[in-house]
Structures are given as structure tokens and as C-alpha cells.
Image 1 (cartoon, rainbow, N blue to C red):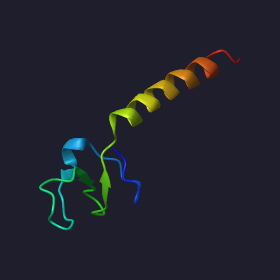
Image 2: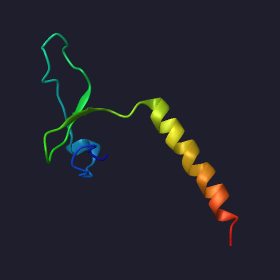
Image 3: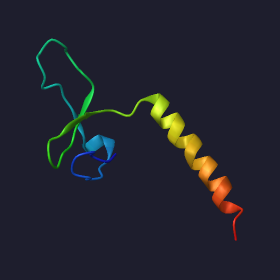
Length: 66
């Protein structure tokens, strides 16, 4: 995972998933950066699918050029 604020790359196990918001929700599913403390939403399955598709698409286009 990569923090969108400070750029720190860390494993999901290092992230602390906490909700420090308004207290209305038990768990909001935010990822807590261990370096700077910034909270951001976890990557959705749609985002993972798009990234996987893009990486395959870029590799197939880039692999044919000398």
C-alpha cells in the first residue's frame, strides 16, 4: 500500500484500520498510515480490477515495440 499523502509504502499488515471520525460508525474501513497518520479509504475491488487490466494492457502494448 502507498499513502496518498506522504508517499510511504507499507504492507497492509502494518496499517491500522481505525475509525477516528464522528463515532456514528463502528468501523469506517479507513487505512491509517503508520508514518504520517493520514487516513484514507482502502482500495476497492473495482480499483484492483482496473489496475490489473491496465497493467496487462500496458504490458501487451509495450512488449511489442522494439
